[in-house]
Length: 315
View 1 (cartoon, rainbow, N blue to C red):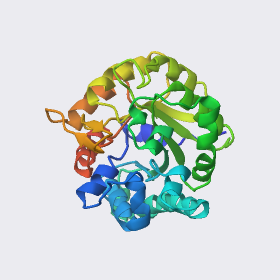
View 2 (cartoon, helix red, strand yellow; view 1 turned 180 degrees about the vertical axis):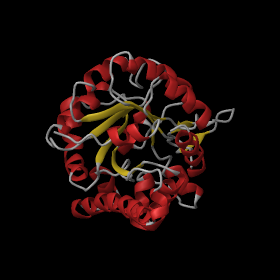
View 3 (cartoon, rainbow, N blue to C red; view 1 turned 135 degrees about the vertical axis):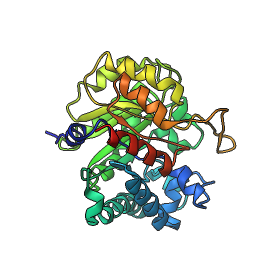
View 4 (cartoon, rainbow, N blue to C red; view 1 turned 120 degrees about the horizontal axis):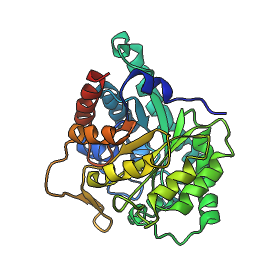
């Protein structure tokens, strides 16, 4: 049986505050991520920069840090000439970096005022992320559910035993991959997770499958603490929250991107017109039924700080 990790936060404040983007914040701080390993490259080249970004989000008010393992996979590391043993060590390092930033933050008594002890969520990115071709925003995989289960298995086991508080199975574009991850989660009966998908509109996953149906399936799993959406354009989020709320009482977690669109060919985000106001959007999302809010690609510690300031003022 898993521990209710989210309950203490929701009893203490209006919503859980998830951190913001890791990769785009690393780039803003000078990191070159023009590599298939993306942010996982910094686990090798500059791990202290990852720790610094985690620390910035904790100072900004984040209740949860998501680790730099989204793009970390045995296949991806192997293509970069990194063997299995070293790949395991890098994944473990990613979790340790987040824990170090959290623990150092918590050592200062002033940081504990009005705060719960922050959580570390180990990112379990989709199979599509390892392809580095934007598949996580399409879900047009050549693998079936069993093959996806086989592909995820070794990394899932490493991250489940890494010392993270829970797993963030995120940016999942299709129902078959959701089912594969739930099968693996059952192999670790004391481990908790959230499941967040990528969506093409206000009703459907990136694959075109109905979001509501996936939520119904996920909500039956006692190890899943929250369900929702991430790295999706903000304009779809309210509708997706409403869809989820119709079929579950689980906490709903949303951390969309800034509204930009990923171009897999140029490996960069294409900026859309109009500014994204995370706090203003969060007001609508909480009213629609969200329980946890943060940001994905393109968001920053300053936006999480503004979000935290508003949410904690509403407590």
